[in-house]
Every structure is written in structure tokens, then in C-alpha cells.
Length: 290
Image (cartoon, rainbow, N blue to C red; front, side, top):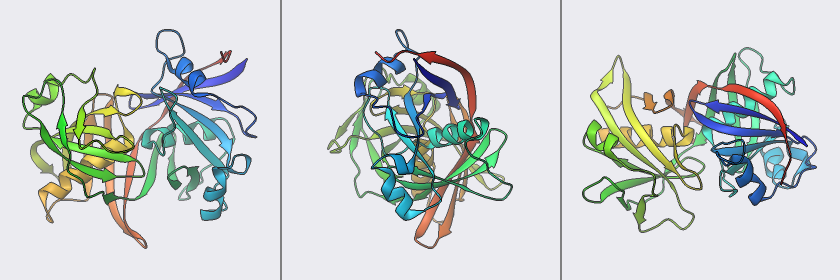
């Protein structure tokens, strides 16, 4: 039997398994079984809590930041490996703090190793902000087809440690009428796939100096989720890009699972984007790995 916890960030939910010394070899099939909502625990993905020094992937994290003791080994619900997860990092850190495995002092940061590099997290009491690092336009503008859209719409490719395509819609009704039970089709299709975000700016777009948008997302390897942290950041970045140089650097993004904050700020290696929001643990238990 293996101990687990269940947690979520704005409805984006995860099975969390502590494996500090990297003793568990969790297969893709086992991940898919744990994340199955009918026959398993049910989740959008799995977070394995492991020390960076205990797994080969952690070497790069420790080389980047020797204080990155913990590595977030994130898997999608289908068992595939993902580079990063913005909501997952916050839930991961909340688990570390609640379990006594780490602390965050006031004004301090906690570095977390991921396959996209080290991510610095601040916050406490279930509210956290994660620096997602430098972002970039990936130079692509694929056409997106989705059930419920009358014609394909152009998207904007954005890399936030993992790949995204953001698609602007014209109205709230278009957003509501989307059927994301089937994966949107991108042409040309990204080699490694991409999360696809559909966004509608609120009216007015900016209130009190904060940009505001609504979003739904289809996550690769998962399907539609109630929230996607890196997708929220990508959506805000895309709308700011379309809005032009007068657009703000602070955004509120509403997703089906709640509301998240996004902030863009300069850093030594270029502009970074940060994500803020809540994280909760729902229950603990034990499960047998099939």
C-alpha cells in the first residue's frame, strides 16, 4: 500500500505521493489508473514528491539552484510526463509545508525543481505565488478547430515552460458553446502537442489597472480541466500581446474553477511571469498500486 494525498488548485486536482528517496517506480499505466475518475482516485495529474538528489532529472535543478531540495515529478492523467504545472507547483508546495517537509519564512522563497527548471514559490496559509520564469512567443500561429466553433480560429503559440496555443473568441456565448470533450485540432500540429486555451476579454478589458479575461482550457494528456496554471499565464500574456504596449502587467483570469492572478515583471534574464492563487489538500489515504 502507498500513502497518498488529494489536493487541488482552483479545481485542477492532483494525486500526491511522497517518495522522498525515489524508491518508487510509478509506471504510466499506474498513473492513469490512479487518476481514473471511475476506477481510481481521480485527478488531472499526479505529483510525486521526491528529493532532487534522488532522481537523475533533479541534477539539472540542483546545478541551477543548490537549495532546490525538492523536485516536482509531474505526470498527466494519461501517464505522460509534463514539463511543468503552475497549479501543481502551488499544491506541491502546500503539501510540503503541511507535511513539515519544508517551510517558507515571511518574505522568503522556496525553490522547487521541475523539468522546466527551478521555480521559486512564495506565500503561506494556502495562498502561493510561483515565478514561472521567462516566457516566450514560440513564433507559431496555428489554426485551431474545436467542436462548437463555426470556423477555425487563429491561435498564438506561447511557451511558459510548457507549450500553449491561445485562441481568442468573440463572445461569452462562443466560450460557453465550446465542446471540449474532444481535443481541439491544431494546424500545423505542434510536435510535442500543446495545451489549448480559449479566451474572452471582459468588458471593459481593464478595471482599476488590472486586465481581466475568462478562459477555458484543453490540457494535453488530460482533457478539459477546471483550471490550468500555466495556461492562465499564457492566456494573460496573449491578451496583453494583442492589446498592445498600453496593456497592464497585472491580470485576473477567471476559469471554471475560480480566479487566478498573473503578474509580468522584469528580471535579469528577461521578462518573467508569476501566477498566484490558492492550494488545498482535500483528503489522505492509502492505495494499492496495480
